[in-house]
Image (cartoon, rainbow over the protein chains, first blue to last red):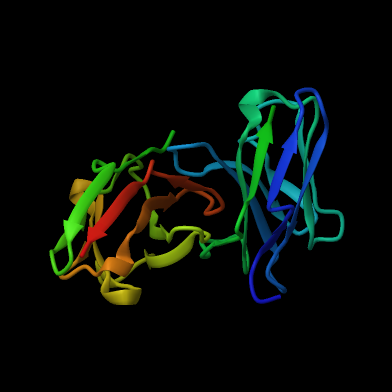
Length: 114
Length: 113
């Protein structure tokens, strides 16, 4: 596609529920990244995929967060037992490769946990 | 851990005024530096980047930034702002293995007519 796409654009859920956020990277980009942006802050790194494998998941805040990229293209960020503190904009980015390449961002998914 | 500091959180300028937004980073090794912009209702877009070579980098829409290694700085400049430059600006550093961006907290710029 022309750019990184993310669905849904907005998600409202209740505390304790499970959510999935989807990212479709730019065609041909092998590297995919997830970031989280809280109000008044810059994006914070969560996880990075090179191909199908998670090369760096050091930014995931705890084991309630998990991400997959089974075919090396679309990725899903999964959050179990959501908490109110998980409310944020979740951003996805992709780059041509993983070596010092420009990352192109999607529009984000705004998650609100009630 | 790497960190990025943006000193100005909110800036208000009149059209045609000059702009300089500060950015300092803490990493001492090889860095790749970026400025991203987020216009109201839109997603993050790349404004300019520095990887190597000439430390004065020119980007889109008349923006430029200067990498000063001795000061760990990468300040963003524009000689004459326009109302359409109203946006949030983020400085970011790509470090180490080149797979993780560390962002500053952002600067909200408002340009008044």
